Length: 64
Image (cartoon, rainbow, N blue to C red; front, side, top):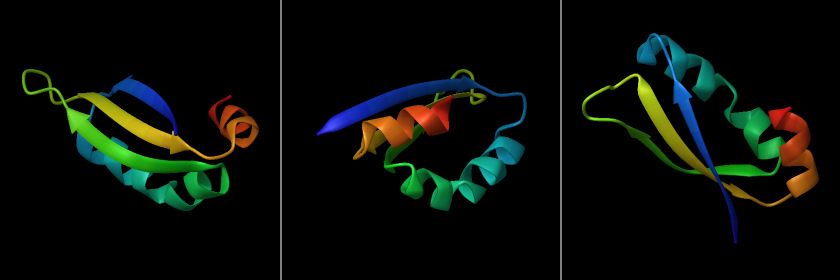
């Protein structure tokens, strides 16, 4: 299994999460399956998430 670990510093988690969730279908089409989404306890706008990557080329294309 190949995993991608991502970190985003956001200004408003609630708004960011709405946009992130709206991309779920795009993630799947890009060969990405969300495994975890975590927030820093001391800074809840510091977000970490892991994707399982099933198609590296499509995932790279989506990220860029």
